[in-house]
Figure (tube, one colour):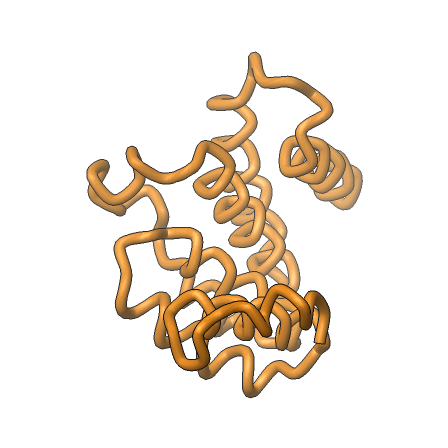
Length: 145
């Protein structure tokens, strides 16, 4: 597991150790174990990053329908749940939703998701990884139309 040294310094069974394990298991492609922990964290916290990570892991595990369901309609989240999140979490969630929609054969819906994101990020640094991915995906989807 990556960063075993870090993990060895965390109290076994603590939230920090379980969070580290959830991320490491996903990084190792151990989807079932990772998803078990990630679902628990996503259900038990207001930190939306766990919901996005759960969606990303479901996508990586080949479950785009479950990923889309886990990510839910992001625009319906109460502002109080989004406003205190790190700035990249919400956009990364929208990109993950777009990837799930594309994999489900819904390219028009994916393009709309990206349009919404790119409108909000119109003045953002173009080197941001999520913005670069969204821009490339939008170009690919437009080329398919």
